[in-house]
Length: 353
Image (cartoon, rainbow, N blue to C red):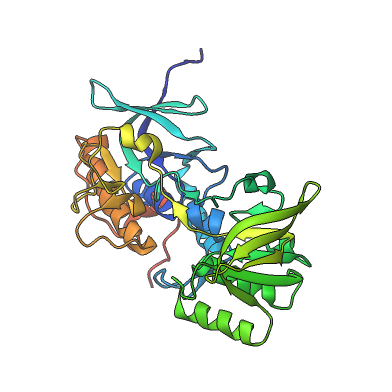
């Protein structure tokens, strides 16, 4: 007989980004099986969605890897623990029950009853900041893009990029360089001749401009021209109030992300500047049994780095263990020497000489 009640779980992780995936690993080492919920249709969070090919240099013992490579390795690392993924779903309800467990419901009708809950939702339901230009939304996902994962859409096209951060500068450089994804022309537009980007990216952008491989304009989009149902050019007004028509077959807008907590704001947790307040002993929120790790949390000295999130996930897992196993004493063990951890990982330790 099939029950129509909620799925009973020991742990539910909201967010399948790198920190959420590592949370699954740390829970798995303590023999706590996790269910993972994410609004995206695939695991990986921001690295997989926004910069799958962007190099990351500050993961310990990995000199360099792309965002997607990091995600792939984390997925491989958690394979032994058999986590259940509920993707393409947003958590809509979190309600604590009389017995202390949490009822969790999603936008797709998934219902769970869990002993512990881990919020690893990055900056929440992050959304690109939209360009405020009347009528421009008609070209979204046709010629106007707020996210791009491959240069193919811009190959051989007059491409205009709006923004002054690393993403804008990196794509401007990528599309200006020889290769199969090279654009016909690339124009970078920013409201001022100063950037919030890494010095190396700024230097590369200026070098490309000096060699006429990239055009940079100071100004703001104030209008556009069309031919039928196609965008043909952007009207850019410069600081001297002069308007220029810039040919545009493809328009990339990188104005940053707007963090939106969404339903998390209604769950009764202490919030400070759109982030969840946690302790630094076990990264518990103001509600015992609900933990927050990664960019979603805040505490004195907080650093928004993936490696910091990994540390937080470790302590959160140990903080959850007494709730999941109240009769069990949880000891710190080492994956190098513990036969118990070798068993849960499904590995055979090397024979001693």
